[in-house]
Each structure stands twice: as structure tokens, then as C-alpha cells.
Amino acid sequence: MLKAVHACEDKEAAHVKVLQIVAKLHEMKLPAAAAFVQTNVEETFSYFAFPSEHWRSLRTNNPLERIMREIRRRTRVFGAFPDGNSALLPVSARLRHIAR
Image 1 (cartoon, rainbow, N blue to C red):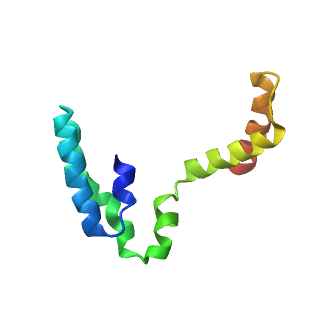
Image 2 (cartoon, rainbow, N blue to C red):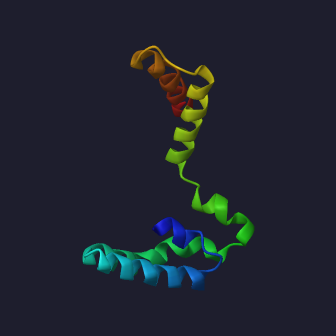
């Protein structure tokens, strides 16, 4: 649900979407989650202060996501692995490279 908030075109539309999500969470009988979203969602809107061309890179600038995407890309090159240990070799090599 929160991905839809951050896909909005401006901050006002995002606030409207948050209110819809909070109402939906109350319908689902999740008042604690609704309260958490309502009080803390403003912290995730900091990227709205930047030009819209930069929003995508600001929202997805998560180092862990970037590492996982790189591992996925490198393991797809190999195709199928005969067992789990053989899949760990390229993954661990990439993680060692990143750690350096």
C-alpha cells in the first residue's frame, strides 16, 4: 500500500493517499498500523523537496537493494546451479569484492 503513496505525483496527492491507506487499515482492524503510518509517513516525504527528475533515484537509493540486484544479475548469467553450494560461490565472491 505504501508504494502507491510514493508513486504519487506531488506531496498533496501523497497525503490524500495516506488518508485512504489509514482508512483501509482501520477497516482491516489494524489500528496500531494505521496510527504508525499516519504519524510517521511524513518522514518518508523528504524527496519531494528535490526536482521530480531525481525522485526515483532518491526513493530507491538503498544500498542493500543495490547489492541484492547485483547478485541477482550475476547469478542469472550462470543460469541453473546444480546445488546450493555452487550458487554460493559467485555470491560470496561478489560480497567479498563489495566488502573490500
